[in-house]
Structure formats: structure tokens, C-alpha cells
Image (cartoon, rainbow, N blue to C red; front, side, top):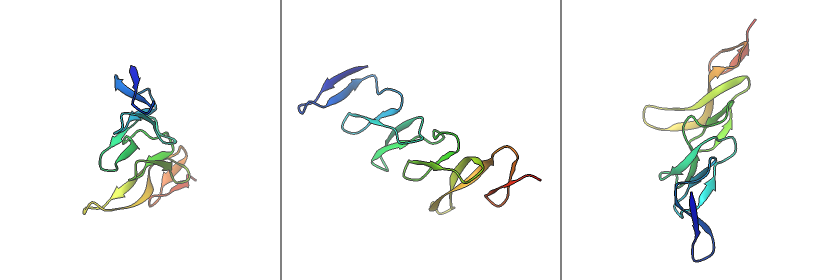
Amino acid sequence: YRVDTDGDGNVICKSGGCLTGYALNTENLCEECGANCVDCEYDSVLASVACKSGSCDSNYGRKSDGSCDACPTDCNDCSIVTAADGTTDDILYCDNCDFRFAENIDACTPCP
């Protein structure tokens, strides 16, 4: 990739995109993905760099602000639930419990 500087001496991305773990923002700067995020992109709705859907680390889920937060206890995959009207409570619910745990009303309980 090539980089150049703007009039203020900031390094800007000219072509080829950003390195892994970074995304190009509206100022043509490569901005670091948030914590626990493998791959991110600029989200025009959020007007910021956000983790791509499905790109949070294991045991983390993507919240509506594009950040990755820890899943509930004993859960390795989680997501927020969106209602039919498009609203969300922005709480992460378990989609897949850890080994030797079973889903019990959006929580994981130990198997007997």
C-alpha cells in the first residue's frame, strides 16, 4: 500500500487500503479496529469505524454501536436480538453455549 501526508503532516492512505486490524475512515486515515475485533470497516450509519458483523473474537458479540462485548458466562457465540419493528435492547444473548453447557432461556447452564 502507499501512504502520503496531508497538509498537516498526517499519514493518509492513498491506495491499497489499510493493514489488517485497521479500517479507512472518512479522513482517509487508517483507524484501529476496536478491542476484541478481528475485522472492521467504516460504518456510515454509525459514522465511525465498527467491527464487521461476525468479526468479533470468540466469546464476544457485536453490539449495535459496532463494538465487541463479552458474551454471557459459559457462552462462546452471542448476538443482540432485533425486534420485528427494528428496535433492540442491545443486550447480548447466547447463540451457542460452551462445551458441556446447554442453553436455558438465553443463558447457559451446566449439563448434569
